[in-house]
Amino acid sequence: MKHLVKGFVAATALAALTATTAIAEEPVRGGTLVTVLGTNVRNLNSAVQSGIVTGYPGAQLFASPLRYDEDWTPQPYLAESWEVSDDGLTVTLNLVKNAKFHDGVPLTSEDVAFSVDVIKENHPFKSMFAPVVSVDTPDAHTAVINLSQPHPALLLAMSGQLMSIIPKHIYGDGEIADVKAHPRNNVDTVGSGPFKLVEYKSGEHVILERFDDFFIEGRPYLDRIVMRIIADPAARAIAYENGEVHMGAFEQLPRIINRLKKVDSLTVTSEGYGAIGPLDWLAMNTGKDGPLKDVRVRKAIAYAVDKNFIQNALMLGTAADSRTGIHPDSPFYNGDVEDYAVDLDKANALLDEAGYPMDGDSRFALTIDFGWPDVKPQVEYVKASLKKVGIDVTVRASADFPTWAKRMGEMDFDLSWDTVFNWGDPVIGVHRTYVSSNIGKGVWSNTQGYANARVDELLEMAAVETDVAKRTALYKEFQEIIADELPVYHTNTLPYHTVYSDKVGNPPLGIWGTSTPIDMTYLKE
Image (cartoon, rainbow, N blue to C red; front, top):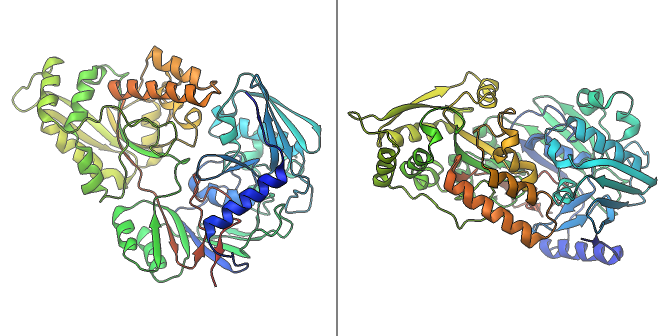
């Protein structure tokens, strides 16, 4: 396998032309974009913290080696070109020569090597760099990433908020493991991205201004970004409606989304979340003794729960269908699997066959957990649906999110309504849910206790397969198996939407949404 990006002046010109075509008008320079974050920011350093409210400011403050277009194609960013060796064991990044950090210090390959070490030690998604054994720095603008095995997910992991390059001269003043708590993560934060930090005030705002020495000439277009922190969805809706904010992302309350769609001056779209890959599903604990060990019981549950009701009545048409653990916007998605259209006769027959006959109006009892209030309607609906086939469900609310997360991580549940992100490549966000080596390793691991030797084999092969067609075929079979064995019943995508006013030009609607640099976004005159 070899992937070499050459003739970079031409490539950059083509990228600029594509961007201009997408914008369809001359960008306007200057102005302050007022945007909104739905929850408080804990850490601005996206090299050590994941999450959508870290990703937005983090992608503006810190640059990554690559960026991706809306067609899942890698594009140059800090790396003006890159090469993957024939054996897939080295990835060479040729860095731009003019990148500087916000304090004026040149960015070099030493910062790339240091950042990889920090991410491997501190980032929640350690699997994305697990095959990386070392980074060589033969000169200031060349970084050679050495791998223990081919790693086709690496290029995607070098984009968005997943591989922020942080300054070694600031963060290298102590132990790498201490970077997560470094004082410069939220105060005087220094990166090499298109915007630099003016002020972060917990619970109130993040204010950024353009970095005049940004390595892409003429960008960013905006002078300033004000990110207001507004936790109340209704308050955010009012701010959109009256023009207080120009743009926001990750809005997910169906009634708010549909309300904002009626505002003439606003565009409300679900585009831009393919790499985030948010999915809702009903998790079933297959590792616990009891009815859920039997696949016939799990299938009966799927046939009893009407996902169309969830999508249309509860989600009010704002969520898309999802049939597997891979997000429908991913190029690896296989939608040609069993959909489990509601069928109570099939459900009852399967439960009878599994040896759970109806005793009066009941067969057996289960509990169902949930971690946040917004999904309580789905949980209550599951309870009512399963009662129709003789399964008594007790809803078990947690005192707070950490309590729910602890229960999930310890596999102390029967059923749970869950939301999980794919994070771009299946290696990063999908494998963790299904491989048997990750059973019970904390929340959002394989908390279902699911084990299938063929699934383990398929995912192990897909993790190192560099041929796209072959890799797609491996994931196709994987999805067919999990749709048949149902460690989780997949119901819908999370209804994330981006809201922007007609004053915003070229909003971030690529695969990373706002977890990508918005150096080409502008305010119209």
